[in-house]
Image 1 (tube, rainbow, N blue to C red):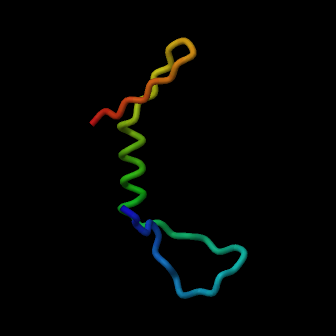
Image 2 (image 1 turned 180 degrees about the vertical axis):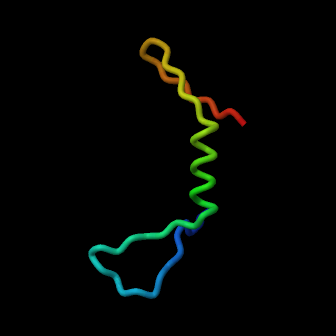
Length: 51
């Protein structure tokens, strides 16, 4: 299940090198975070994925 989540560029590796994630990766993360609900009860945390 290994995936590459960013596109590689042909520029040489530099100290200030920045990765550029694909649009589909950003969309997936945003949709996941919208569906995630964290419920705090006393000293416990419950995570529920609502989809």
